[in-house]
Image 1 (cartoon, rainbow, N blue to C red):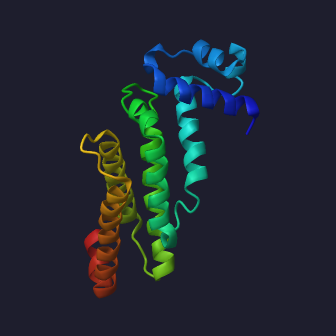
Image 2 (image 1 turned 90 degrees about the vertical axis):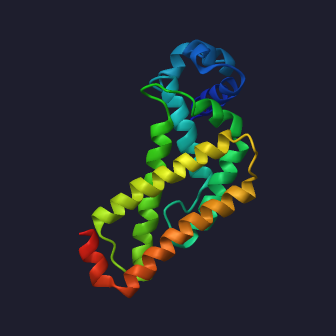
Length: 195
């Protein structure tokens, strides 16, 4: 990644935790980065694009085996650790209620990750997963994971990282194990139910 791009992302991140996002402009970002304003447009469309890139870049670095069924517990722990370390930043970012807000980027990533984990599960456990049902799981579990993550970031009763990880791991494990038990017990019945 280009040095200029990294500097713009770092400057944006510093500004987001220190002031209201609607007060942040391309000009303030570039002043914080110590760079010419025009350089911004060599790398990003707008300030929302920077937020999406921060998430994509940092999560990719933090969560190495994102869509692999065998490593999903480690993925969950790594992801929660990342959000815990960047809590103030994401508390500000997830409040944004505008068209290009990064909420959609995060939600889409989580849904894609869940879909990849279930596809990997099918390969690993040698069971077939109906495409429509996998899409349903992707949207439902990915959406639930996003909402739980968002709620945790804003909680006032301060649920610890370990507790949140334990709860989400149990929730996802229950879903995965429940699916596997049903699939192995009644493979043809399940296929007809979800077809």
